[in-house]
Amino acid sequence: MSDVSAPLIEAASLEAYLNEKLGGEKPLSIERHRAGHSNETFFVTRGERELVLRRPPEGAFLPTAHDVGREYTVLSALRATGVRSPATVLMCTDEGIIGAPFYVMERAHGFVVRDELPDAFGPTERPPFGDEVVDALVELHAVDLEACGLGGFGKPSGYLERQLRRWRGQLGLTTPFTRPLPDLELIGDWLQGSMPESPAGTLVHGDFKLDNVMFAPDPPARLVAILDWEMSTLGDPLADLGWLVSFWVDPDERDGVFGELNSATALPGFRTRGELVDRYASASGRQVDALEWYRVLAVWKLAILLEGSYARHLAGATDDPFFAKMERGVPELAGHARSIARI
Image (cartoon, one colour):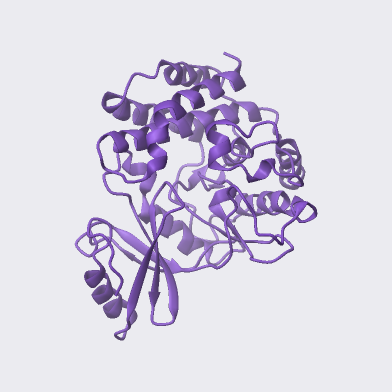
């Protein structure tokens, strides 16, 4: 059995629990996945079976941003659809097992694109990455909610109003532990005053971007799984598109926080942000005239989310060195949102 730090995984307790729920006594090995910045992810090998365990981070300041129960519910429902998502195994709400609620799913194999690519994916192999991401998002937004049991998963109407109310509340919970951020307050006012009318509601992922999907290991580029569903709900599909393209770095945008989060799309051969938007509009039939508003919303939300992570850093509740950079990164994001909004 591998040695995993007690605050995140109680390995002996987890092994006993999985033996009870999945049957048999099989050796367990656990490896912490360090690449993400949201829920904690562990690769769990039980005998020859490869699994993934997801749990909230220790000391989360914004607990609703780390809802593994929500993630499990939507992934389980999507097994009956064509949406590219991992297969769930079990959900555990008993915090006594490992110190937090968690769920287990089958492990998908492939790679996640961040700042570099496997050697096999040269410039001529890169355009399909953008195509696959957009096509997977269109498939997600086309899910028959009633047929898969997600009709009551959320309230599709009023989504944007709830987003603004929720994230303003999250900002209010966080800044007493960090510092005043008047630019984020200003952007919240601008978003409230210029809100567009939403299209018909769909299932939305809530964190749909290039480093939250997995691709098959060999060309041609093929998206095999959408990951990190803890923010999913019913709502405005253009919020997902705005989030995706906000993280899609064009060649002249390598510097700054977005470039650090995901710089691969600035490499030669990738589709541009505008090409992704055009493909989505054509495939979905939705109007995208107000997409700049959704980009501002995306950057504003990211800044608030990362300010929560910065609060965890200040409190000594995280060992992720990325969050220390948010002392400057969050104000930079606020400035970026203002530049998109032209305020």
